[in-house]
Image (cartoon, rainbow, N blue to C red; front, top):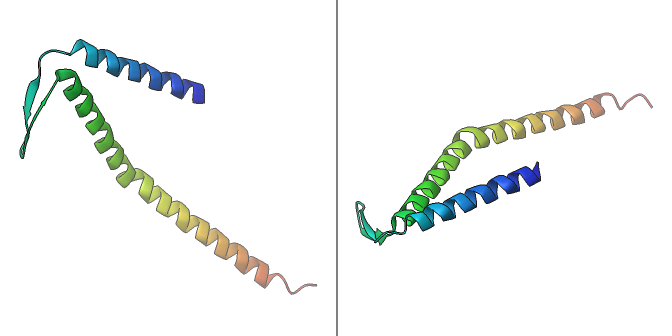
Length: 94
């Protein structure tokens, strides 16, 4: 599985480099709300894809990973407390 991830990452890296090289036309100006930025179209495409990945990853982290991690912590604490409670209540036989 790790080799598969490596191959997929390399394919996307090469694809990003190809997009960057093919879109090496004269500079464009991105007019954002607070500033202007001059760049090539390839850099703008790669930056927008990277921004989308970061925003999407943050949304997944906030809506799925953190709540599931909190549930797992709560279940682990409940299991630990029930296991320690069982050992105290059954430890009077010997």
